Length: 50
Image (cartoon, rainbow, N blue to C red; front, side, top):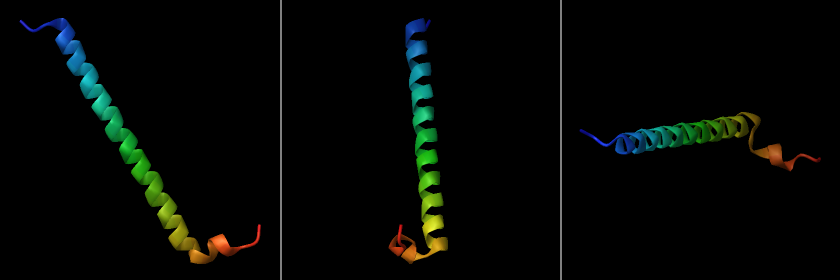
């Protein structure tokens, strides 16, 4: 039989990997939206007076 502690460790490892994958996907999506916004507004968006 398998050790219950080993099964719990494996479940936590898989959950942690899934959480990291979701975090990286969200970061990539934010970066994509940021880049798309800059492209749509144009490069001179940073040269406007505040």
